[in-house]
Image 1 (cartoon, rainbow, N blue to C red):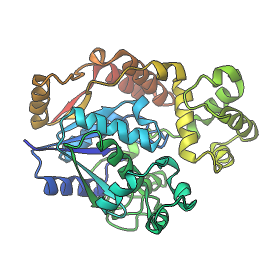
Image 2: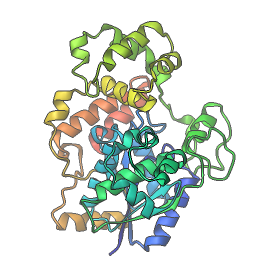
Image 3: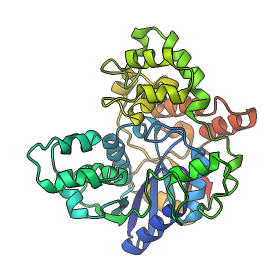
Image 4: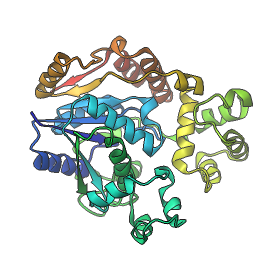
Length: 371
């Protein structure tokens, strides 16, 4: 049996993702396709446009066989950690392949770069400093894209799992594009179009996206600003990612700014990227501390969010091979489920009563969708 793994966020699921899924199946001839997906908060420190249960359901309806959760504490991380954590889960799921998008789509060059000793999260800056790397890497620093950065993080993690074969697919749309300028626009373009009430039905299989609450930092800024300005400094420093004096920097920005856009634009510096700041705010919102992260145990379990009939059969096969499956909330590792519950509460904080009930009850009941 051949098993193909994908690392996804589906924020939201769109035609480009369907192309990725189709090509992954064609290239691997896989019997089972598994996706590991971030939850209600995504890697770049943003609220998922749609809750994780609805996104997982859409993924299975589109042809994925199992969607496993990448827990909050493993997803809201740097590209390096995000990639490593996702690969660890796909390895536990006994995948034979991992298929990912890439702007340069040159697996050998990506492998070569992944073998270098540098901080992938500051890749562009590192390469442009000219630390005795060949000229080709300097060129790559100008031509790389977000998918290439993640690809490098996957390839680094895969050094631990040589049995998994990596395959790249050309990323055909611009990740940073804000417009619906082709048949495969970026998730960012779709999110922006949705905010502008533009018609996006031709670009995504997900229906009625406008009916979802779609939380965002603008809505939550009042609460975050209050936390930054009123939480004692020592307590702020205990929050995960509140390092190197960033708490003082964020305090000053919050004090001066009454809107999120002004705050984030002031907060971004060479030292602190938008994603780095937003990830820090996520951990502040969820009250995730350094102590909790330092004491957290290895995530040696798989939590399915949705699966097909074929996926259910494969889950049984994994269990027969002593792979632990969290089929319900209490079966998950306590440290992870506690944070997931806090993340669900935070995610739904500004939603109406019905959505709050749906989000929190789904978290506790483990609302697996089965196709």
